Image (cartoon, rainbow, N blue to C red; front, side):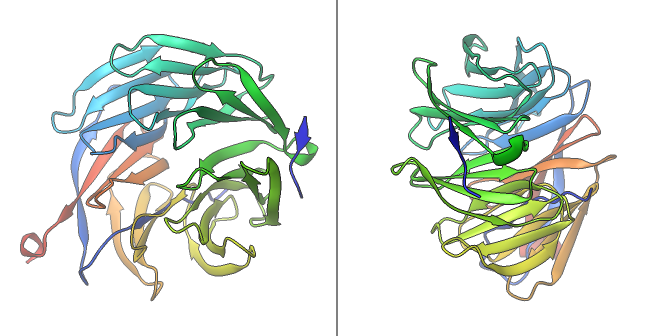
Length: 318
């Protein structure tokens, strides 16, 4: 086993924009889960959405109609995350029942159950080439799996068994970011098979962290009520914002959207000015994601719903 080197929660999404004024409005509310929705993510062309819930289920949605296409059942505990494979033919889920499951995205059939974790699995994600799955658990254990065979390739461990909250890859698949409850960001080099950098980022745990498109910056969200942008090579803080739970970049990184309780705040990154507040959820928001074209945002909430927010054109605003 390899060991990694040594509240308010905030979610950040960096949105693309080429105009001075960008406004979003609520377009759709997806209802059907019977308990808290932990994550919700768009498909690559934003025609579908995938949600993971504490009601033990995963749902696949048609965005235009708002109808549930498929419900995936098989976990015996809360489902903390669900992610598409790169080709979107499969889904990987992480659960309170200490398992990772691989599903057929079209039929809803469970293809494989990956066992080996001894604690709640908080997050699981495919590698960008779809050949591996990486999962992280509450006991600080991280497993890298062969996505085709389901066999465990490697097991890593966060020092002192701190909970792994989130996992993300660089776009080229060469680096992995582990966000841990010890407040540190860990960067794992896939080729070298070693931790190349870690630093203390947040005082109350790192909830999520992502690379930007160029791989030279990282945005993290912590339990200390802060979102931070970092130099990925040095681990030095470049900017700090107020926000909760999640952080993710889009293409030109002009704007970020952050969770603040049951609202989404959108900031101009350069000026650090808040330019819009999105309200509509009836309880805490747990995740947000932008569509690939930057024109939509999806949010998952403790109010059992998923909401789709769409961009208004300048003509619509006037």
